[in-house]
Length: 161
Image 1 (cartoon, rainbow, N blue to C red):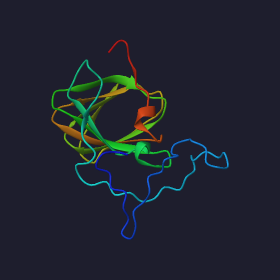
Image 2: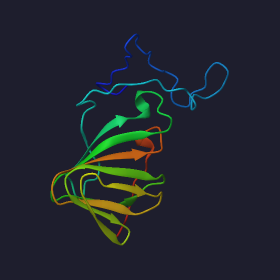
Image 3: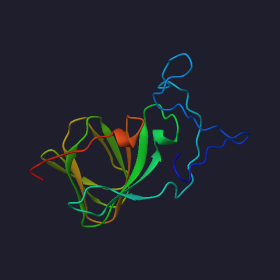
Image 4: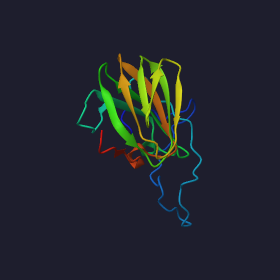
């Protein structure tokens, strides 16, 4: 379970799904198509974590929807925090990604293009596309990957960066 995650509906408590993900049920079927139930994630939960990227710093994230808390229909989502003057190194993923700018201004580096970002802007980043971000001021961006768990998203960094 994700710390701080509320698994309650108005009339009942949802039991923790111990067989999720990909563990067979009594019939031998996997639970990849389990019907997800509504989940309320309160503001401020779960905790903000520091990204493992050690080269440039100033990168934090908070997972909102993640398979570690129950079925998600192969979707994970979170908020990416980038401090003013910091950058995320060029990298790619094996899955596509979307980014929606919640606050702040900066730039996305998409291959050899540098794109200005402002609140309300959305990016679709195809799988395999090298990309990174630079913050002119503190930024918050909502990200989404089509995978059940953020832990399954690989980061392949550009050696030249």
